Length: 389
Image 1 (cartoon, rainbow, N blue to C red):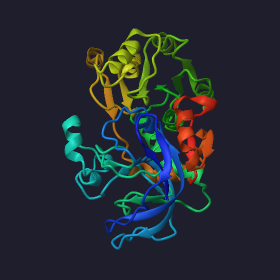
Image 2 (cartoon, rainbow, N blue to C red):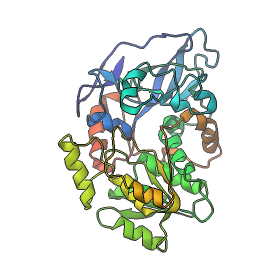
Image 3 (cartoon, rainbow, N blue to C red):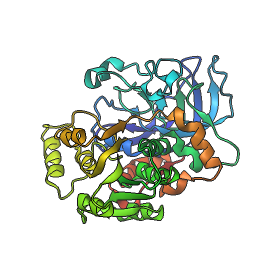
Image 4 (cartoon, rainbow, N blue to C red):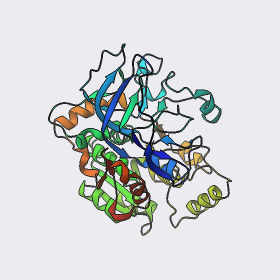
């Protein structure tokens, strides 16, 4: 089959790889009908995440048609149309039974490796390094889905692939980011970044009752999309973000702040973002947490900082003194997608949201390497890429 494979920093190729096969009775094989390039994939593209091997198949936002099921899988049948969560979860362990599917204790065969870095292991993920299971991803013609009797959700008739594809990751992630904010009537929510996850967070914050959403970016197309969703927009190059948020909130700060940017924050005019970049470039640091610092400072006393951006290592100069002395609450997670799927599918069915609004670029797998570059460089107004094998 054809698939997009990793060969090193900024080297993604479309090439032939072996077809996946059933390896366990709970498996399923799907024929991929749509997949996407996620912002998290860019961390792999940029060589930020360790333990990527040459020829690893990329991708974790995937849906398709079931073409084969294992003998023990009674939840799916051939012909079912499903969306596949990016988190691989057994459904039976301590965390899965409590709804914390992204903490699954069984699905990461490389748990010992990642525990040395993070202290313990999260769930395995599709297409996301040999720290997180080494599973082949879904930017391919076919995908093997482990624990397929737990993860995939069937798609109701009448919905297009593009309406439901993002249930695999960015819609639940953006929704969880907003849910973490414990939004009350009248609240102002600040969202750093206006990429695909942040666009879902903006929409979700309004769905959950926010009065105002402040969206922060510098890319005109992304700011325009956020504004079209009802957000107040700020340009982090042109505006003093702290001063602007204080002015908009009468000096109090935002009720909650969402960091959906994570480790690869773009440099701004501030000294700390430039210092972060120098440290990472000279191997004196692992992440660039400028956005997290700013979110802490811009949050009101006893507010919430919601973190869904990807961080990989150890953060430097995080203002814990500010957080502790002002009573901030931090909420963060790798999204337990299965927890959110039924309710968010219902939101789509009822017309509360059509997640396809973020799509700007489409192509086939053969277009994938060039579209990775376009997405990474934010060229041609690119916000979200969907591939159809």
